[in-house]
Image 1 (cartoon, helix red, strand yellow):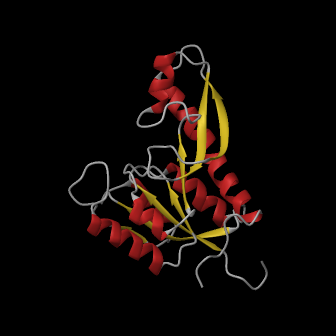
Image 2 (image 1 turned 120 degrees about the vertical axis):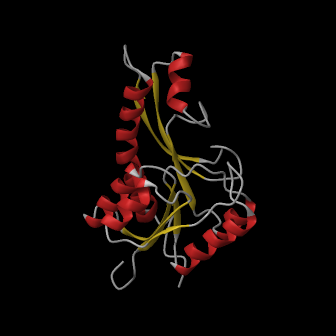
Length: 203
């Protein structure tokens, strides 16, 4: 990639930002051949925006509109505009708690990725670690997948298993899944870049 710019990531999240921190550290340490171009959140006081500032990265709150589970049309347009202005090659969801619809996905075809705290297709949706405990499974984990218009239904890219231990609570299991996520997400994005699946897409 000599003489070329790095793949530019646009990270979107709603929460504490632990996966973002793992990605930012991997980029900083050259373990991930990419750079984070912008960080966006639908929560003004989210941890992910505070972490982005700590890393010296562009960070913006963009109001999501009145709906609880999705962006309204105006907000969707604002997110797309912000990502395009940042010349983003890959949109990385890191704890973004809203479903993305067709207009957003059409703006970034096959360029939106997510990580989910379960071994999809098992336990899609919210609190999947609690679902795993309630069902009594012995193994759960995390999944990196392409994003489509469904809820955690996009094509699977990579997975990491996490055992469910005797005596696990929802909190202890979730923490171990998050530890696996923080390793799997940067590794998977790096592999996609190295294999040419994700590449510089915006001049």
